[in-house]
Length: 546
Image (cartoon, rainbow, N blue to C red):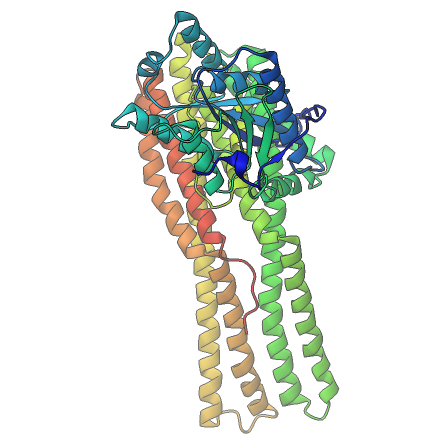
């Protein structure tokens, strides 16, 4: 591998003044974390100048990070907490306000401890581990070298920027610092390299730079205005339901309040925005489809009943222009995207409340592959802000009943109601389409057999109906297809027995470990269904149909 010191892409970086990370407000605003990975040697000089240079590298990351109008930003350090560079950089990051620690373990914890040289080092490892927001034990490998290679690649793949404490020498083995830096550069990840010899020069390769799209999407969400009085009302309405239920579990009032203050602002905001954009998208979609039918009917009426007044055809032109304007408005305001994105967030935040109450700590259960990184980051950031509590042993039965009744049972009732509503709408629109087809058929037969020849304007009326009714039927079918009534109704019906099974398992759970296992499975089922809905509806935006 070519040494970065000889590469023209690497340029010396001057130290910059520290920039404070913004504090977050408890108003449903979701922060954005820039993920900082670390790789480096285990044996480092005990030199304050090296620590200062690490701080300079962190300042540089904040300087390079894009700015957002309404979104607080923070740092997350991704470190396996080996001796040396891993802990040194992690410690400096955790000095920053709001910083988080994600720990990928290359080995099982007991096995990993054998790599640490002293009891003091092991105690330091556990101290860091206790401060971790996420601990993720990676899959088993056949050798230690492969395990360290795997964790290094995990860090690069999860990070937005990599800090490398490296002597600049070529690779000396599998999983070494030089190999991880090479992998990062191959992926065009920004790398800030601190050479581990005095005076510890700081150099950089910015690659493709720090990500901006995810922050822009999240900032757009955080900027959207909700009427403060209505937002407070929605939070208080949910609070009045949730706090008494949590206190019934034996939670102290302060713990119940901390849960409500953590979750409900996020849930209420996401749900309110999803409902807003759903209404707008729905009615705009209806308008475009039915206006298209109206334009067809108008054109037919002018041609058949007023052929000597061609200027009346301007009515059809005006309707078509209106349709185009509505379509452009829908695209420009991203109605469809906002609706499905914010519904995805709301359903995640709903599950998070129950998972946190059950004491589930794994973040992996909440990760859903949507192809939109900002959604995963948003749900991740909210989850990491959750309060940590321990329920008393005598509350297990009440917790079990609460999760079965309020969460899983609530979803059973919701899916049952959703299936009935969607099935009813699908049937209604299907019958309407059939009725329009029959009317069109009757009009065509009447015209073909001359049943209306003796009626004034009868033939023209029949021809008009033969043109207009299929256009209306096409609009009805277009609405049905766009909303995926049939597919979503089937999915809701299929969810009911799965959830009922989980509800029974929850009611039969004998202890907290079983409760948590069922809670994980329930969350996985609900969120997977939400992800599947997202994927289906993502391709059902409003389009022109001619």
